[in-house]
Image 1 (cartoon, rainbow, N blue to C red):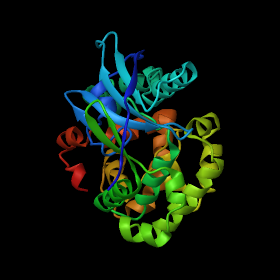
Image 2 (cartoon, rainbow, N blue to C red; image 1 turned 45 degrees about the horizontal axis):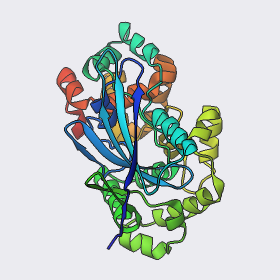
Image 3 (cartoon, rainbow, N blue to C red; image 1 turned 180 degrees about the vertical axis):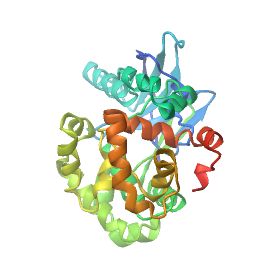
Length: 322
């Protein structure tokens, strides 16, 4: 049975967000995407989740909206196993602000709605939603590897088993949250055990190899963000099992990570027709997205996948079933 790590110390921050900012849409995406872990709790517009910093420390987070539409603020309480010193408080404040994209200026993205009908529809439906980031690179690498050559249900099964078997259970504010395993724990696990317990198959070796590299000092996501998009992608593709598609998923530079399913969706949206061979038009769709939206293509990608119900009604197509 997984031991629980109880966090009894806490400190609170109130963080100002740049306009526009919708807290529930940002931390609990309509498509069901979690902010930091699939086992976080979202009730009454309050999120209880967990975070691991690049130093390897795990904290509990309680997040809720503390402002108005015209003055958006986020109230954050951080739970820890011991009292935090001033430097650690500053580090967490910076990390959470970056993670929630509180200071990101997205006015240029919203300006696209003035002459782009698709973006106009997306903005009307999901006004104020932000793309978020993860301070911990290892869960992003796990996500990328488990999404390879697998339907969503199969990927969810692998990630759930991995967290349940090797993750951390964090207790705080009367809640319990399961968080991803540390790279050190996976680096020291037996490949056969990973294959059997987590049903990872060939991915078990990839994850163990990746975990070992991360433990030795692979760049953090904030460090990759400081590189050019090309440099960050090349660095990620040095990892065993991380190809172009997986690197696009992990990279902090907004990309357009199309797979067969999402290529079907964007074929209808951008080309007006169903693709006979979705895989064969991925490069064409990426070129269109780059030409049409430039650096905001990642935002369009995120908004589309979180607005499929509304888009289905507008286009009279059930995108979610493609």
